[in-house]
Each structure stands twice: as C-alpha cells, then as structure tokens.
Length: 409
Image (cartoon, rainbow, N blue to C red; front, side, top):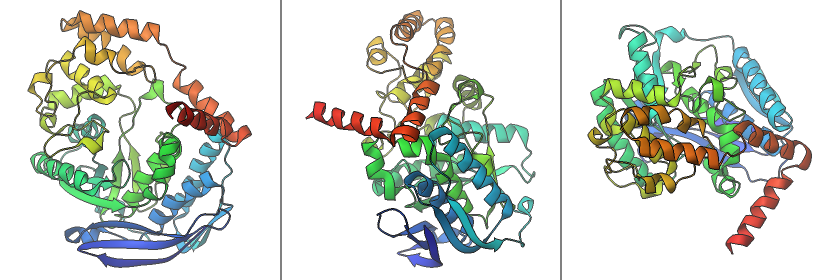
C-alpha cells in the first residue's frame, strides 16, 4: 500500500486534508482518504502523516498488504507503538503485520503541553464519564483540562442529515459544559463499511475502532496535545477488541498523546458518575440505531443499549428526569424483547441496585435471563474468531454468513 500526494484542499465550505491511497497486493481500487472540518476550525486541521498512516495501516494488515509506504517523516515513538499495536492484532487474529516504510524519523516536534486537551465526544455514558473525571481531576487552568470535544462523522454514522441533527444537540450540550465542539468528517472507514456490514462489522469492532478514532485525533494535532478515548469495557471484562488498553495508547506520538480513560470503572459506576453530575442527562445519546434519529430524539428506547442504560438510570432514580428518553419506565416486556447474552456482565451489576430501588420484578427477570441463556463468554467467542482467521482464512465466518442469508431468503 502506498500513501501519496498529501495535500490541503477546500471542499464546499469545509477544509480538507487528503491523500491518495493505492493498494499493491490486494485487488482493490485506489481511493482518496480525507479528513474535514468546518472553516472556523481550519487552523486546527493538519496534514499530519500519522493520521494517514494510522488510518491505512490497520486496513492494510486486515486485507493482507505486505507493506505500507508513506514518503513522509514519522515520529519514532508513533512508528514503534503502531508496530506493537499491530503485533497484538497479529497475535489475536493471525494476520501478518505489514512493513512500515517512511522517509525517515521525525526530528522536529512541538511541546504537546502547550496545546489543548480534548476527547472523543459521542454523547454516550462513556464519553460524558471521561469529561466528568477530567473535571474532577484537573483544574480548569491545567494543561490537561479538557477544552474540546471531537465529534466524528463517518464511523458509526453515514447519513449526513442524521448526523447534523445530533451535532446540533451536542453543540448545545458543549456550551453548557464549557467546551468547544469540533466536528470532523472522514471516509477512513466508509471505504470498508458496506462489506464490513455483511460480516457483522467485525473489522471495525475487533480491529479498527480505536485506530480510526486516534487517526482522526492526529488530523487535529495542530490543536491537540492530548486526546482521551473512552473504553467500552472495564478491567475485568476486557478481551481482544478494536478498542483496548493495549492498542490506543500505542497510537500516540511525541506531538499527541492518546489517553485511554476510565478502564477502572464498570458501566454502572460510569453511569452513576454522570448522573451525580447531572448536566449531561438531557443530552444522552446511547442508541446506535441512527437511521431512526429525528430532530431532538436520539434514543429508540427499544434496543439493547437503550434498555440497558434505562435500567441503570431507573436504578439510580433519574430515568423520569432525563428528557433524552421519552419512555420513563422499563417494563418486563421491554426487557424480554432484548438479548443480554453477549455481555451479561453489564446486567449482573444492575441486579442489586434494581432490588434496592424496589424493582424486584426486573431484577428477578434479569437473573432468570442470565441463568437461562448463558452465552459463550466474549473471550471464547473472540478466540473462535482468532482461530477462524488464523487457520481457516475466515472460512467459518463466510460459511455462517452464507447460511444466514439462505435462511433469511
């Protein structure tokens, strides 16, 4: 793979940095990789080779490229960290690391403590937790006190008008929380999203998630010296995954530190931290069913993530106070309509709080669901994926996908 022609452009009112990406060992078309932002943040956007290299290296490894070549100087710390992260992905999934070829080591750099601290701002429990912890730990005049939230289009969401609805909501939240919301638009994952959807988004979930967020942060390295990314899991429940404490910190450079924040807190502990703060409650957005988004309505109250969050808010006594959820109670029917078997640990910690708040009915139902449908652990499931990739070249996954389509038809 070659990354060439790094450049800065203007794209219909947005500023863009872009590069041409050409595959060498895969029969895939070349494409123009870009990062964009609004004109008022143009000075923050950088044609940073680390952004393009990180955005390409993990797809190159996934699809079997032998090398990734970029004719730019690259920070030795970043290059070494990237090789370590790809080593973990190789260990987990059996994919060979490509060679990283650069013009040479970067020998000039800026003091990252003289720049701003930011975080990836999704509007979910985890990202609000990151901001709250930062507020509790760092005085406002500290260089690591978060000043900006980076909201990314092109990863989870790919419908521009739905994204703009949500951006408007978080812009209001940002003003109340005394941060600046910076929208970022990129196609680093859109190139693979359609085919990844046919494979249950395994590439993004298990390999590319953290790298895609960190790459976008590097595209704003003129502005940021540190960017925090919130974890999905906590220490007892981590397993091989695309966002992991063994990955994101390795995507740092001498100019930009990637911080992975909150691994010591469970999901319920994070929710309580946000609830005790109070300010984010009207702006919570946990639902991934973004095709259903409407102006000022971003949680369907039916999907697994919505119901799980509503259970936690109910146990904490604030579900009825959150305008983010138009439904102010959780019924047994709602709980029966979701599957909890993929991540039962999220629900086990809710049982006692639900009992304490007088909802023994939901607590007992959770206990029954956990006992009745104990799915293979996430670690075992991931291990099967590893063996499939390493020894069967994804054959088991492809066979399952074909059988699923035949059953559907």
